[in-house]
Amino acid sequence: MGYTIVVTADDDTYVKSDAKISSVTTKLESDLTKETNNESTTETVVIRFADPDPDNPFDWSTTKKWIVVSAAELYSASTAINVTSYDSGSPSMQTTLPCSALAATAGITSYLVLCAIAPLLLAPISEQFGRRGMMMASAVVFMLCYIPVAVAKEIWVIIFFRGIQGAAASAANSLVGGVVADVFAADTRGLPMTMFSFLILAGQGVGAVVFGWVDMYLGYKWIAWINMIIAFVMAVVMYFVLAETRGSKILEDRARRLTQETGVLHIADTESSGSSALLGQQNLGIWSLLRTTASRPIVFLITEPVVTALATWAALLWGVVFILYSSVPLIFAQYGFSSGQTGSTFVTVIIGAVFGVLAARVQDRLYQRDGAKTALGRAPPESRLYAACVGGLVVPVSLFWFAWSGRPEVHWIVPTIALVFFNFGVFPIYLATFSYLADSYEQYGSSAIAAQSFLRNVFGGVFPLFTIPMYSNLGYPLASTILGALACAFSVLPFLLMAYGPQIRSRGRVAKQIAKQQERRASEAIRERERGEKTESQTLDV
Image 1 (cartoon, one colour):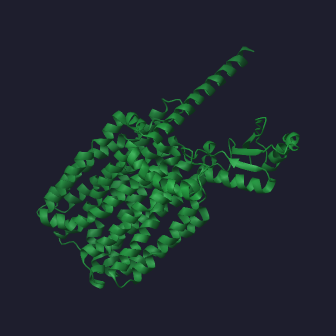
Image 2 (cartoon, helix red, strand yellow):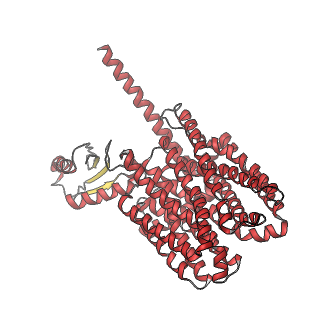
Image 3 (cartoon, rainbow, N blue to C red):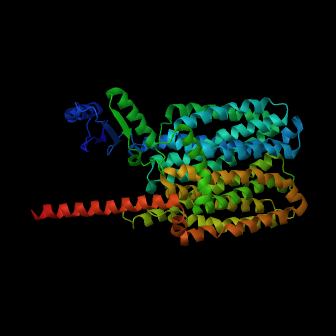
């Protein structure tokens, strides 16, 4: 297993090697023989990933990368199925327990609000302690929470355990972006992030389509049991295929093992792994570290303007999405649809997501084109926003379309087509908020995404509580028109970021620091290329 070491001693000796660990240790001990009689000398070995290194997630085979990322993304999709499948069980829940429609909806609210709060702690901790352990614990808790939901005789029990389940599910949603950033370089990140967004949105569609019929014939309890089986399968798959992806965690584990084997202190150079500690946090104690990492997403939300802007945009959009989804049963009840038939209209989510994937492929080509013009072959984060600009325009248009076509005198296919366009517009926006933040904050993408997810899920959880009063008091066309007007208000954001993104990012301390690191790497790449060209020229002269 190859790696590079830096030996820090009194004489500032540096040793580099690509030998086996045992060979490197022997070489190190030999080089330090002259110092062994000096008791005041303290030897420290700083280890880095070699180039290439089989333990470095960036150097994994393409197959291994996709297996690991697919496991994480499929788990995330199962949590998306959870949200809409629960809502599909609302009719039988209201008659079986019994409970009011508002009380049943509170199960969505508790799930999404806790799903918003938990990443503030889980995502930053994963940046320090790794992804795998957090994801596995999340999967087990998520699975077990289906049991009390299925057997509960009171709605408050369901609401309570839905909240715990939402907190567990948050790891899937907030850490996947970090997992992708851990193993894929920015210029190859487009496809895995596209698949992540597709699986999230398609999962919501599948949950509504399939479990609307399950609720009609079997009831909400069987919705919970079937989902538990899915969660169990996902937990087993993750146990066997989900490897640790956090580079700093892998290096720290290696350093700890080498320290135990050799008796010489080994320290991981986490900066070289692409997952370094930020702003002098390397030496914090455990509780100070937890306080710092847990508060980091909130700090990002307040002090990083681009995080604030994208989080607000995503939150308002997600609030609109869940109000619209909650209004679908009301709108299609006018056509005499059963709960199963109403659930089938959510196939529009899947169709819209498929078209969204096609748009994302075009977006990825545009990103690659822009990257080819730069020294590192990496485009700026703003190049992730081309498709989002289109989505920002499609969403309000489709909402106005849905608002004024969802009436009994208009055929039901007309508002259904509007839903296809709405979900198509949502897809590139959802994808862009993850990709843009992952590119802007690199190894701290999970914290930036956690900040965005916090606001987004709070809005998504609270807004559905207003659906029935809003549509009852304002009327269906006007209520949906207000949603369209709200979408119009924030549709300008991607255009503003395209024009002024670098200036906005430079106002954030962390984004500015990351940008400087990127500029330094670009300068080093240019110098390395020039050095190579000079060497080649000299060789030809000889």
